[in-house]
Image (tube, rainbow, N blue to C red; front, side, top):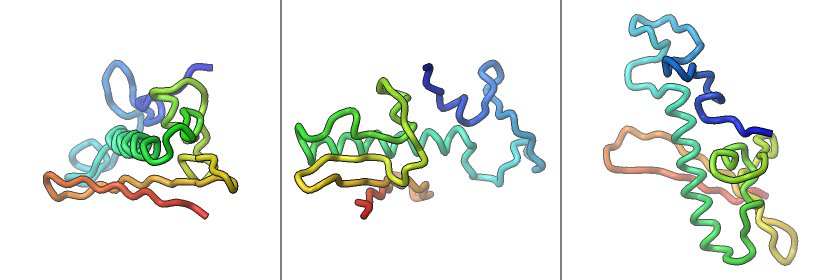
Length: 122
């Protein structure tokens, strides 16, 4: 099973680099000025999860393995498939069960600042 690239997930044509979706704005992109494209949003989401992967791995040490990253973004850099329907992005085994983490990477317009929300799910 071949994993999908971010461009495939966004519906972007590999040759032109353009989205297959038609837009209604005067700019031709279908977005408001300053709004990220679908591909850019996927890139931000992936980057957020990649940073979270590094942090969670550091926090849990040997208990954290590649298999703990369970979202579809894992397919960009790791073997195996992911599942975006679980409600969390990381599943880490601990003594009394598992810890579940959901990552949010909202885009903020403040230059030089990045925001990453990592929440441990119940």
